[in-house]
Amino acid sequence: MKNIFKIGTLGNDADDPTCSVLAVKSLGNYKIVPFSEFEYAEDALIKQIIDAMVVPGAYPHITNFIMSEFLSVLSAFTFVIPDLVLVSKERNQKDEYEALFNHSATNALVKEYIDATWSRQINVNSNSMACIRVLESTNDCCAITNSACAKKYGLYVHKVIRAGINMPFVIFARNNAAA
Image 1: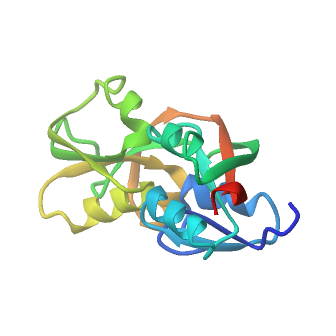
Image 2 (image 1 turned 45 degrees about the horizontal axis):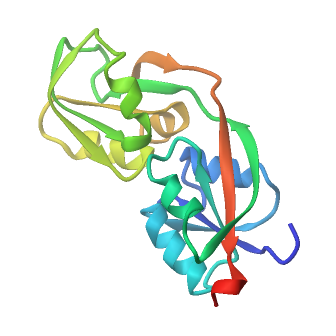
């Protein structure tokens, strides 16, 4: 990609195993600029702090970026994301949890998982954040995350919910006409 050096996406740091960071790494040797929310990456792109941003097609608010007068779609690609899994900090899965943490992109998977129940479903900013929230909780909690995040944070995988998703990712650039 010509004149693209810094790509913003969702992650805690450039080595965070979020699906988005892993997808950007698959593109080659770009400087990854992590953001806690895609909307922060959008703001940085508009302000020319980054050259592009990468957003997965599963992100529920991707249409806001597609319709933005300040952004344009540069290209799209697919990347097979790590398995999406149910995890907790306990070796054995429980029947009931206080809370389920998940990124909103995985909300469609929540109703498919019926082997356990939870009192509250809490959307968080990323798969990594779902893992962190489970680890920080003093209650029995679980999360839907990706297998790479589960491994990084030392959580136990109780079920593979989806394997081998060939996720579309959209690369957005600043619309220079909106300067």
